Length: 91
Image 1 (cartoon, rainbow, N blue to C red):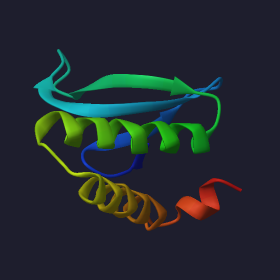
Image 2: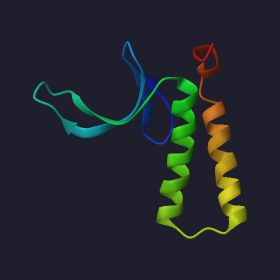
Image 3: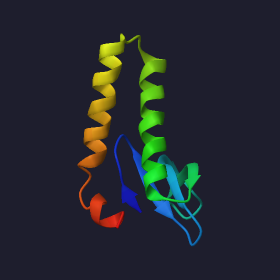
């Protein structure tokens, strides 16, 4: 599993990449519960979806003018680009 930003993670199985969050709740084996958010064929598609999701979450919470929204979009893009070793994983 890859720790991304804002509490999101990227996981994978043999068929796809999975965008998920980890709940504070525990399952019957006392392990944190994984909440799957979306399924993607590529890591790039997962990251693009996360970028869009984070923008939607921000716009839903507060009113922004266009310049503030654009600045937030740039901030999220920069944070995603700076995830350690992410470039290596996409090769």
